[in-house]
Length: 335
Image 1: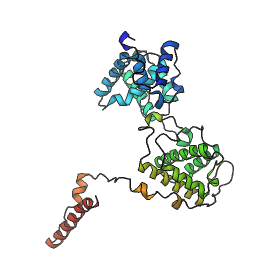
Image 2: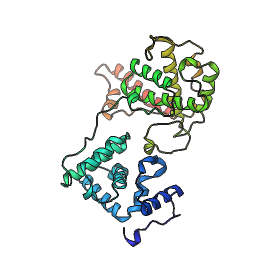
Image 3: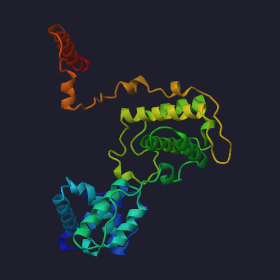
């Protein structure tokens, strides 16, 4: 590190980050994985510690990715490069090895980090620094197996996993629903630790949770190690995200009330119907009114075909054109 690259304390980063930087410089601290990336800010930390050397390496990697046709390569790899440089204690990409990249790739569950490490490995393989590269799309693991157990009652986790296995929804949809259900489990752990399974839910508890959703913020009640991908941490959830939460709970509790589920070694059973999920978890009108329109994008060719008059008599053509003009006016009237 050059003389001009020394970190300037008190010039922007949080006090915790500055202490970590000093611990690295003075005490050879390298246990960066003990902190959540959202609070540690790996990219800023690496920039402070390594200075222009780190930015030179980042520029070198991004130049190759740009030549390959990647747009905005810095956003794709800067977090991953900061992670491996801090782990190895050097900003020089020539000193990286495939073993180091593979180890970081296995330890981290973040999709953004995994993709960044894979891209860096491809660049280093192209530069003949390492032999081979990491897969861009590693095999995915179902959400119940990826999830961490901390902060959630095991029994709630077991019920969510049972629902995941039995649900007929598409896998991608179930993955999203499972994430919301884990958020519910963390909320229970904080506010009602004695409530450990859906069978214990009462009408009053359901109303309490429905009221709490309106105050949820981004980053509340999460346990997965993907906080670096959260944008707007601490801000209120969007109305659409709140609506998704209510949708998930309506489906989850309705399925458990109507379809027997097998949890653990116990025989399959339905939960008692203490409340109507379709009513209790109905999205409040105040939230529905705030949800913006989400029109579908229609290809120009199909849009043109929709209004192409059929080959028929002039009278029918006139009628078809009239219907087409009405259809064109309708979206604007809806706005």
